[in-house]
Image 1 (cartoon, rainbow, N blue to C red):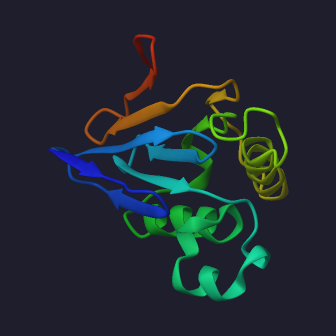
Image 2 (image 1 turned 90 degrees about the vertical axis):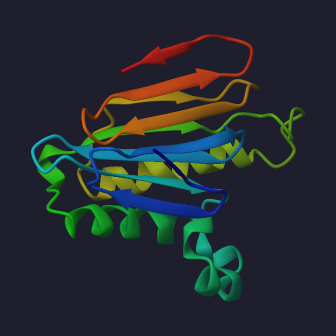
Length: 159
């Protein structure tokens, strides 16, 4: 059963029948985490790097921003028995789909926000597919922890 994570959204699950999925990651970034012992995972689809860009919107939609969404993602999986030291971490997106000329560098800024947050919290990335100019989809199977990445115009890979 697909558990769809929309734009500016996050879901966590320990349902072995569930597959977390988010579509059309352009400049947005999808962060998927999975604890193989707890068999629990989560997926965040954020749009912008810093909640200070719009504190009112961040209060109403914390998953829109890296700095307010990523901590909530980890806390949601911790509540399902996950532990940071066991997490497998996948980061996908951050492309230049809308901003092809690089005026705003949203994809790059989103990538840098993830790296900064993870560095500060000693989180290692197990797999990343960042940048370029293609949309991506990521799926995370809760039973196995298998992640599947589909790049627009290319095949799907399993990690």
